Image 1: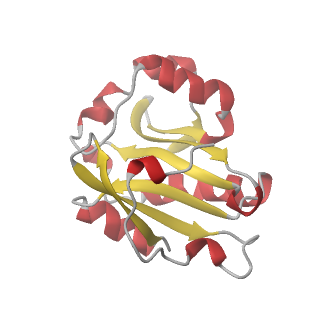
Image 2: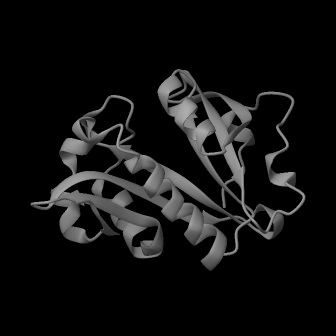
Length: 174
């Protein structure tokens, strides 16, 4: 049976094997610690029996006004635990927190334009491609900014796609 719980400091020493996928963005320890300290509600781990880490999600809440939203910084599932809808469960958890607790207008995430399996999964979860960010990943590969409207965005303004691609320096960081 899978257990999903809040991520804790000890998990930082146990989740390296989940990050081995070449499409998973990895960060330094201080980055993970910052998320854990500032947005603990947005950082969860999924465990198999025996406390084996199956996957995790890390995110935050950011923005102002109608741009107030949940953001998925990373979601990944170990190869041996894929195709069990674990990423869907983790995404739903972050969406619920963004919607019901923090009253966000939408959830967004960035994904490599070449990561077709992830893009298809996000689309099945109701995300749309909001805009393309040119050379977002290491100045080389384009990223797709995908969004899903939440209940507060009654008119679904947050998911009206931009007509042109943007560059990373045009992104608004909060």
